[in-house]
Amino acid sequence: MHPADRRSSKKIPFSYIFGCPFIDKKHETHNNVCNWRNFIKSIILAGGSGTRLWPLSREKYPKQFLKLNETSLFQDTVIRCLEISGISEIFVVTNESQKFFVSGQIEELGYDIPKENILLEPVGKNTLPAITYGMHEIKMLFGKAVVGIFSSDHILDKNAMLTIKESESLASEYLLTFGIEPTSPHTGYGYIKPSEQIGIGYKVSEFREKPDATTARKYIEEGCLWNSGMFLFDTDVFFEELEKYEPDIAAEFTNSEDIKEIYEKIYSISIDYGIMERSDRIAVVKLQERWSDLGNFNSIYEEFEKDANSNLVYNCDDVLIDSPGNLIYSKQDKVVSLIDVTNMIVVDTPDALLICPKTSSQKVKDVVSALKDTNDERAELHQTVYRPWGSYTILENSDGHKIKNIVVLPQKKLSLQLHHHRSEHWVVVKGMACVQADEEHYFLRQGESTFIRAGMKHRLSNPGKVPLEIIEVQLGDYVEEDDIIRFDDDYGRE
Image (cartoon, rainbow, N blue to C red; front, side):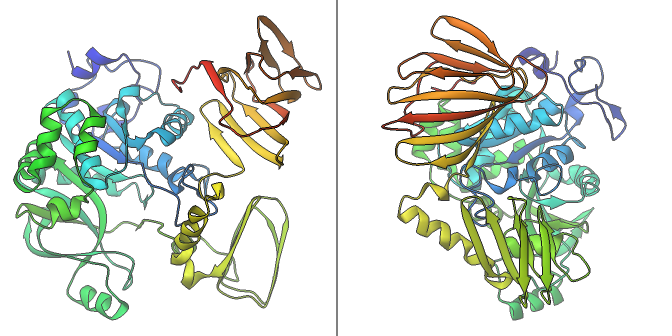
């Protein structure tokens, strides 16, 4: 029996991936379908923060989960990984605050990833510990395996996965990275200089740091590639090189099963500094497909289709007079008007407004740092906050009251809880609510309301097939989110 069968009866997706059929999404198990050991496993790194695309992304809602199109960057990454892996062979390294984004957005795609495949780092320690965590779990479950490592916030044409699959033969001897054929002398990427060809790839002569524009042009003339930060590792080769160059990290993952204890003892270091720039077993494979890491608003502007005046406009009506070359985003369905404004970024959210030249978009992270210095929660949270059961949006707020629009997804429920310092008044806007108030249970329909006094155990759930929407009015001498005592929770929150 395959290890995945021993640990879980989770379902996997249907697609013919390089000649072997998988079974459709949640419908059947994969028993006797094909030899799973022939397939590449995948690690998705999804623990990043949202500093470079603030105020669209925040620390508690980073850019990989933003939906600039119908799907998020993270969801696009999962879809690409399904070209080479089954859903139970995909592992996501993230953190506690983002785990419900991971599971929820995979569920939106129609897949059910095993809970144990979502690996939670106690604290971020850069890419080498994160990758080691994933490689260790895959080796423990599958034994020797070939593993693709992907960032969750990149744009990449799906066709690139075929090249990655074809590179598998080199992984038994080399740690593989993937280099992008440059389209411009970009100063925001590191570069890789290839040397002699070996099969589909090349030995790596040198890794180079992010250059200035003049140096970047020189690198391109020398045949250098952009460093994509994607990898293909054989578990045996990876741990041999880890033990050689970072023996302390290797020892901690070998000697302990407590991930919190491991992360307390290891240090923060990137995969590039820890292994890739030191090992003599590194090869690079060229990818000619479209790729971007969407590092700032300027890169978003460069990647997406503009109108006839070279403006990229999201979510709003616009009246632009003699104003070409702008990126404009508003989530408030308002008219955004610009007059004689060129090459600017305008990002308008309910609680923050960003205006800057496109060429200065890399400084957005400095705004986030300034907000953190004053403990401003707008560095971390949107007015819309996502939870495993749905979301809420703060409509109005003061020291003594807060008004929220709450959306509960079908068949989901909030925790059984109470508040010491506030009462709550609920009015159903859409759908049907099931309410537990102390020992009483009852239903509320559209237009009906109820009152939950302070100190009362209560729970809100959606028994229906459409989203439940309510308006919640909180009143009390303290209306912050930490006035919650949970007694029962479907999602394992304390």
